[in-house]
Amino acid sequence: MQLKRYEAQTINEALKKIKTELGKEAVIFSSKTFVQKNRPGRKYVEVMAAVDRDCNVPGDTGFENDPANNRASYMPIFPKYLKNLLLSGFNRDISWCLIGESNAEFNREGNSLSYENILFRKIADHMPVEGPIIVNSKKKKVVAMIGPTGVGKTTTLAKIAARYSIMPGIRVKILTMDTYRIAAAEQLRIYGKIMGIPVYVVTCQEELEKELRTGDDVNLTLIDTAGRNYRDNDQIMELNRWLNKYDEIESHLLLSATTSEDVLRSTLLCFNNSRVDRVIITKVDESVTIGHLYNIIVSLKNSVSYITTGQRVPEDIRPATAQILSGLFLNGFSKSVSANS
Ligand SMILES: Nc1nc2c(ncn2[C@@H]2O[C@H](COP(=O)(O)OP(=O)(O)OP(=O)(O)O)[C@@H](O)[C@H]2O)c(=O)[nH]1
Ligand SMILES: [Mg+2]
Image 1 (cartoon, rainbow, N blue to C red):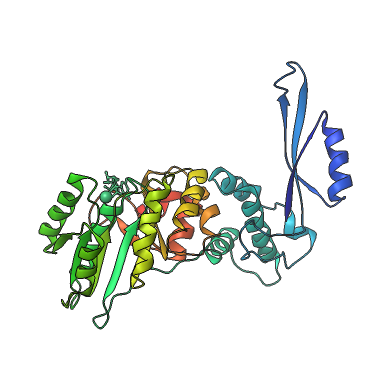
Image 2 (image 1 turned 45 degrees about the vertical axis):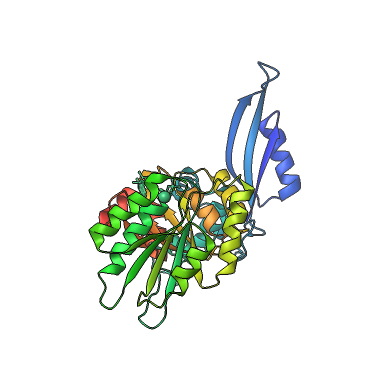
């Protein structure tokens, strides 16, 4: 599916351009009239048109070319859904691909599924999810929470610690490397005391090494780190150094759903200089629309492990599944996750 924006003085002029470039099969998706900024009184029209050609999403190879290759497959049979996707923050290319693929399947002979059901599955199909941290009693698992400031690293770590600490045969310990803020270690000590989990502050590489190599019977070590400013290269490099030194550490990058798509992309670019193994999406309860996250997630190399849905420890966290995420993207937080709480 190829979607293009055209500008012209009149709608007829725009249609002529579209016909020449995209051909007679082009579908008009929307048209709007604007007043020219530098020439008050003069108007121009903007027309969005699409044609069923290539369905590649930038940065993503997961979307198929439209298999049905007939007119019904690209006609926006259900403009309501297309509009909803766009209003939820899904970008135009991705929205059109999802609608194109859903239309094709909906029109396929013998289909008995509702359109919504098909769209739900299409959204889920493209999502890399891996689910919760796997801990077993035989091997030591070490997980670090990394990410920008204030995204919920410490709170999420406490939620995960609480969940695993009550599992039979699993022993948990917490290390904090956040020595920038005095209150940070104290915040974790309080959680640790309530949950009966030991908390250690590590101030240097030697102390980290000692804690990782000690012969205790802990199965899950959770490491809290200080928030990194994604624009501060030194901070990112420092994180990089110790993450690369310890292969056994599985790093989970936390991204807040309340962050704009541009900032999320920059954050990912910077943190990908470090080793990122999984992604946790936080604060979905605070975000009005989350389609912008989908645009990011479908192009990720890393899969999503958890989503967090509020401030309560340990309640407000869910292991990520394609179904939960798809429901979230399609129906928003209040109708999906919170309804199933
Ligand atoms: N609404 C909502 N708030 C959250 C969620 N997770 C964390 N918070 C809140 O976000 C704020 C920051 O959380 P922290 O866990 O301290 O974040 P952090 O990433 O450790 O912050 P720094 O260590 O300063 O970088 C706190 O007020 C948390 O209660 C969530 O899923 N939803
Ligand atoms: Mg913190």
